[in-house]
Image 1: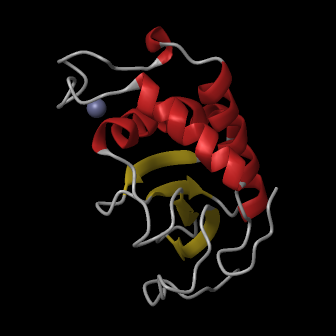
Image 2: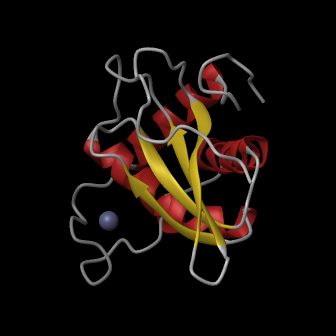
Length: 157
Ligand SMILES: [Zn+2]
């Protein structure tokens, strides 16, 4: 099983956007769970405004389960630069980056307001802080910059 550095990441050394395997761990019955760093902007240089970031969270939660097996959760980093993606089993960064790319292409080209899930006060705790304009702008920017399958050396897909 892949053993990688986890919480010792030097944020000045990475080249975003990228997908990085943070760690894998085993449950008591031997199941493997993987934690990925899906970084969408360069640490300490750029971050997503909350409305665009929050909308991307809703759309990742809708579309990652369609494109990746074993989806558990996708949650925002407080810094506004990326997401934790949790998956059952082991997966390559290429597999995750390809799924992310497909979702960003959908957002950039096809997604409309009605495609954003859970835009109501029952299912979202800050329904007024969502932006289709911002999420499309950021999806195009991330696609332009290209998603790397390695956090340190640019290996764009
Ligand atoms: Zn929400």
